[in-house]
Image (cartoon, rainbow, N blue to C red; front, side):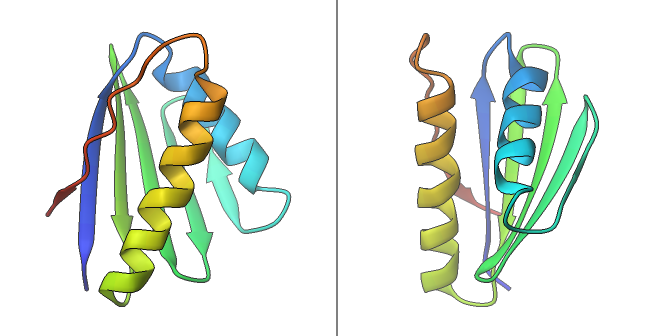
Length: 94
């Protein structure tokens, strides 16, 4: 199963994790607390972890097209929520 990970430096990791999960939770299955979150989309799933100074995003999808789509959805929403800072989201295969 194709997967990718982005390790995004930010002092607001928990805030963004919770914002993403609350936002998507209106439409898809989402579970979260201040440190961990999990989103289940039709094209795959994303696990989120807030660490000191770091938001870790890990995606899994059944195929490469789904993974690419998932990366785009997560990144675009995160950038929108974090408009006050310039985040570097660099997906790497895992």
